[in-house]
Amino acid sequence: MDALLIAAGALTGLLVGLTGVGGGALMTPLLLLVFGVAPLAAVGTDLWFAAITKLFATRVHHSHGLIDWQVLKRLWLGSLTASALTLVWMRLHPVDETAVTLLKTAIAAAVLVTALGMLFQKPLHALGRKLRTTDGERFKAVQAPLTVLAGVVLGMLVTLTSVGAGALGAVFLAYLYPLRLTLPRLIATDIAHAIPLAIFAGLGHLLIGNVDFSLLGNLLVGSIPAVIVGAMLSARLPHALLRGALAIVLLSIGVKLWWSVGVNT
Image (tube, rainbow, N blue to C red; front, side, top):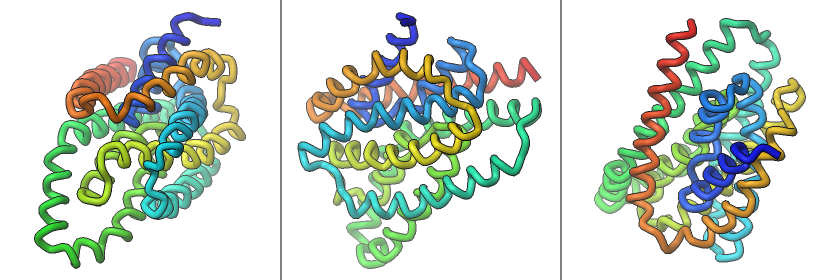
């Protein structure tokens, strides 16, 4: 057992339970920058870490009746299809040094976009609320197809980098369902969406040989109890402050990761 890995898993698990964010956006950069894990192994291992961790959080949320299953099905329609196509593309393109560099760059970009999305989630939610209340019929007409499209974006991004299902998913949902989803329901639905997506993408990476089971086991020892605690507390804590602080941390990590890619190329 590695105490540092267990601690990293516990920290990430707690944040996933509280905010729905961190399974990929925080853990993958930590694996790259702190633990020196190879990029493909970091992505493949983190997909399974996120899936299993969020499964426990979803169990708590489901017991509270918070998940919106109709919204969830729309997201899955886009994300699972896009994930399958992305996995096919990955199988057809051999991994060389250039591909590894591009993967690191993609992960850094995904973390930066995730952080910016979190910082601007409140204005986007306000915009969605305004459109929903002033032009409700037109907004509702595009709600479902835009949700599927959001799923497509998340499916490609998560399969390539393991980043985005939680934070960017929450941003999309906040804009598209400003009245329908309260914050606890948004977090619960966002977490539930990530599980089959991460498992589906994780199976593809498993077949390629990108999963480190020893690393995964250490992370889960910390994350499983922590995510249950976080999920139970998620409706009682100031999410705006917590997500804002996390967004700034992710922005710093994304810049550091981007810089490290530039230095090593």
